[in-house]
Length: 526
Image (cartoon, rainbow, N blue to C red; front, top):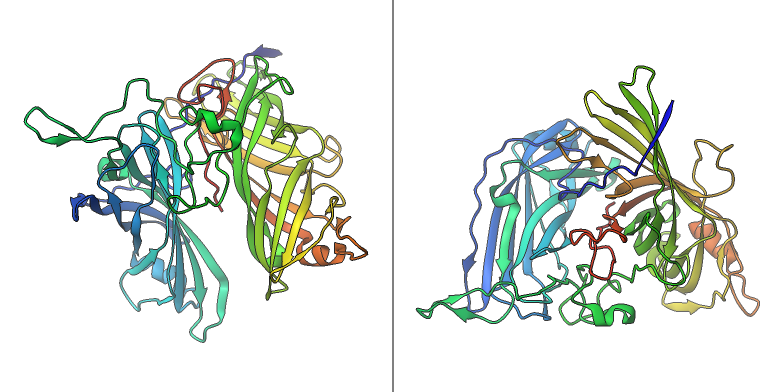
């Protein structure tokens, strides 16, 4: 027996701490911010975390220090300075590392930072690196990293609040003789402990002019009437959104104040006459990383817009009516300047291990994007599990190439000869070459769902083969072999993060801008 109902309700996602790590009770103190020189506040915070190590989940202590301005002006970018992240891992972590014959560890940290102003929110990634340190013979391992962090712009008056979130510690391991160990690297995922003081609060920066109490005491100004919140990012937005800064989704600029950001910010993500919306229309931003196995590196998948037509959820009831099988079929398309493709993006690698090569690329959708979810739900326990597979044929186009500082003309039609190809679990139903990304979710009310859902987003992963290149080169110079030899091949891991969707026919200020673009900007994860 089959039933039919409307699409699964679209739960609002809470801030992700780490889906893979359970809460762990650890006591720690929050060191309050103290004002230093005029106009600057020095922040030092100690927070309890839980880290997933090969031997299990262990408590860790994370100390974060930085200098923030005492006050900022609306529309004026600033970056926290002197940012240091210190991670103290317990002795059990050292035992895990020395078990692989490691004698040294070089750390790189990726700290998620939630930035909010009023109802607007954005996520920044604070990255830090360190020189190799020897592993201690006993006791904890202390890793201290430093690095520049994204700039922030408050577009209206009101407090900007910074809170620490999930932390990833990438460790490059070395043997005593300086050679790599096996494995040569390890990523330790850490989440904020459940009893962290003030939900990981780092500091608050007032934005706007200083006001005064009747007794003359300066006080922070609150949000201005009708304020639409914060925008975090470069002050020069893409021309399509230049006149909508107050309505646009928050951004984080991977650059210095007043400088050029690493990316153009959030591109427009709108339905229009060329692609009109329906009652089931959603839009969302996606981003992520893909490994390039031959080059032993990773390329950033640029922040891209996807327009989605969400299908209804079908239920096939169990014989005893205790629950049922759920299925849902949806379709989507990438959208950039009216075409089914991503924005251009750059990647720099060491080709053949020693030659710096920079390529500008575009992923072009050449056929339908399908999104199929299936799972089960219990009417007794209300527990629901879903598995989603996204399939999309994508051709990789190279629009510019630079080898060792010398530009090489690739011509107008340099591309992979076929779409990217993933292992397909059901080739008879889904023939042809295409990328396959998978995500799963569980939901046990009253808790929020965890994992990936089409409506609320989350991580999708897969593996892809990059085909040989064709059409590359001009003037008789054939670059097909160069690109094929250096890039093409199997085993390239992909991790894509989709943000919370915006349902364009049902305005929700927690999910959509006033002009019905996605409010949530996802942060790429490795």
